[in-house]
Length: 242
Image 1 (cartoon, helix red, strand yellow):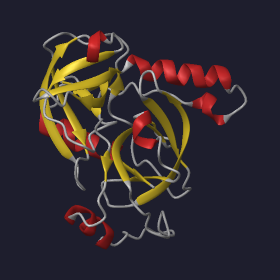
Image 2 (cartoon, helix red, strand yellow):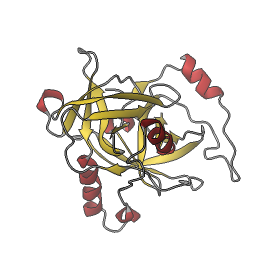
Image 3 (cartoon, rainbow, N blue to C red):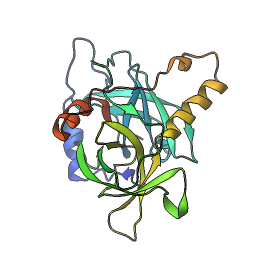
Image 4 (tube, rainbow, N blue to C red):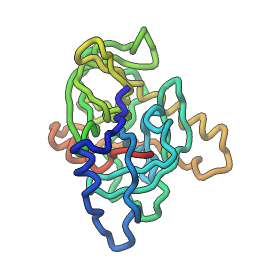
């Protein structure tokens, strides 16, 4: 499990706690800086403020916040979870949150190809970190057919981060690593995002959640990796809570 249990004396957290909130034209997104006990990663699946992360990232959080690439925090709530796929859908509740542009990536519903090159973005520390590798098995831990095994380096805090192919499609979500083998990481398949949201819409027919639209962006296709990452950074968040 790659959610980070944070030591409050840790140098990175001291840096985080000393950071000043960047003011906007309105009030600061969160008026009191949140106490941080746990950390993971999440990414937008709807520009209205819906994010995907891991269920295990938020399961012990009574209060959930997300931090964007400008160092701003926004309060969020957990809409639903699925422990089988280890996914959670969050909704940013701060009215000051605004997504500045269209989500540039798509969520892949089909199974990715064995040996496909992939990269990940996540928050094993207080700034976004890039990693690259390849899909090494179409099954996850102990033959789990709902997940992939990928060959890549990942650390606590990467949980919930997107796994992206060269076309800018999200093919999976980092869930954990094999602690007995170096560079063996597991990721739930991206098709489970569709299942999670479909089940939510079936069970909650009267809510605004009916309007969730999974992104189908194509603007990352054909770009080099540096360009892809620059366009994605705005949509990948640190998920923190207490």
